[in-house]
Length: 323
Length: 232
Image 1 (cartoon, each protein chain N blue to C red):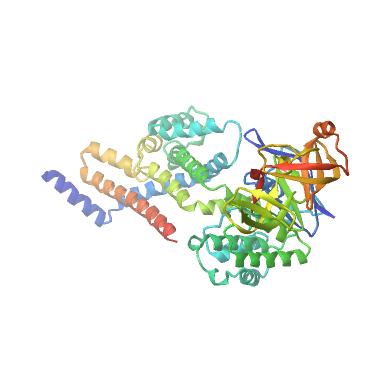
Image 2 (cartoon, rainbow over the protein chains, first blue to last red):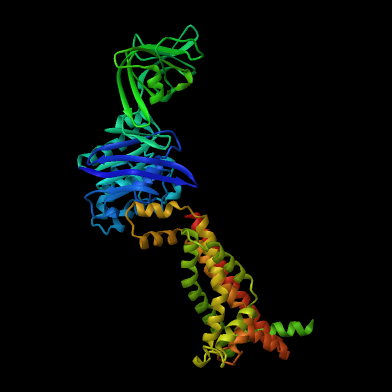
């Protein structure tokens, strides 16, 4: 059963389109993660889902739940805490909903986030990490069918992220739908059932393409990102060690023959799928790893490429994003 | 110099001797000014919040009118309200002219733009996340606005005090609409004007000192609340 259905949602600020023609469905009881670069529209989409910003076009359906106010809770990016005690902040939503057992619930959630010693403190004395945990506790305590979290791991150390994971896991067990935004891909993959990419005003309801775990190694003065014994990309980066990398599918050039260019990476592969996605075509090739390239219909027609054909996939070192 | 000294001494005698006339005048002034400031708060706070938090056509015009009203001399407000309350005027039959109510009406128009403009300025500069946070946690629109007001309570109080300060010390409206009637509409400022014109400096000075004390008290209270709020 779907909780949200978005049809052709459009949102812009000061004549700048942030979201355009967004079509999405969020299913009940799943954890979704919105990823994309800073400023790509993750917060705008969350504000829309929280009904704080009305879309300027399209339809937003919030299914099967009679009251939006009582069924959605939202933890904003760089959260605002009311100028009072930690306790009052955590209890705010419960009091707004006139719920019972406020003390008991606040004590339980604050223990879960490890902030129970801070309950009587004024929020002005909290650190960034403590502020984030109070804001998260204030959201999770409401136990609403839908939780929206914008950059929930910001300011949190690894131990606190694990506490958050515990809270997410508990909430999911209760059947709640959680939608959170982050620009940290590793966290997205660790916590979410589905990763949704926002890029260039559009959403891509599938995992971020060309995302790999590997190791940055140095040989002959060159840095490369080694995925397995056969596959390594040349990189222009200083650090070394375990890392994750992604390659924007739009940055991968498809050719029938290997060609000479300034691009340092060119891998041979076999086309395994060609999928029409409206304005663009998603071409996947097996190069030992699966690489996805995004090309136009015109390019595909001109190249005359079919499934099963051998091609070369070429991309610059600057096209590889390392996390 | 001796004359001034004698007047100051007599003024203190009147104050410390709890002269009933003086304290009646003080009570009248404070009562009227507080009522005006209260009514200005009821109207000015919602308008200030509306201007700061909502987008609507004509917002700039309303803001410009408020700023203009803040600078209008008290006698101009006095004559305008007078023209509505005088016997031949539309509201003349209500018999409000030369009553404390008439002063309250006039002083309301003095305090209202100050309260509204200051609340507008404070609310505009405040983090808009307050409302979104409240809504995001399930607050009703009324609950969210209540939380917003709580967050700006100190500057809000300062705005109300500024409105009170504007009217407690004004003379134009009180004189034109109140008529400076003994033990009825005589306020501190109209009494000072009258006593000074009569050459009764001592009574004028005594009221002047009390006015200063009231102003000092108001400002000290705001400063103290501000200080406590910053320390909290």
